[in-house]
Amino acid sequence: MAYQTRGRDPLLDSSMTEAIEKRGKELLGLVLLCIAAIAGAMAFSYHPDDPSWMSATDAPVNNWMG
Image 1 (cartoon, one colour):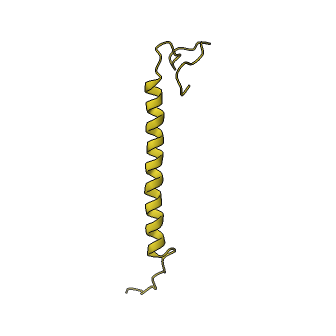
Image 2 (image 1 turned 135 degrees about the vertical axis):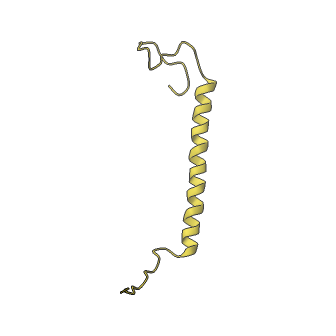
Image 3 (image 1 turned 90 degrees about the vertical axis):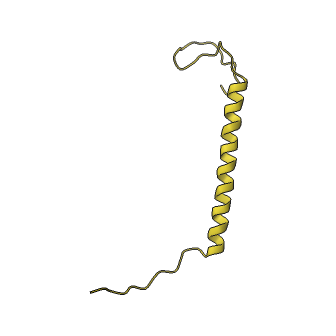
């Protein structure tokens, strides 16, 4: 025996859902660009005398990202 239930109306209409999805993709793209810029700055300003996670020293950090 199957019961029939009334379907719910969507929380947001289709145009609002599309706009949110589009802005979400744009935001994700901006976040990825920022991460790439940070990684590029770390690689570009690499200095071999920087302290690393394997060596604890009081020497100042020389690269741009610390």
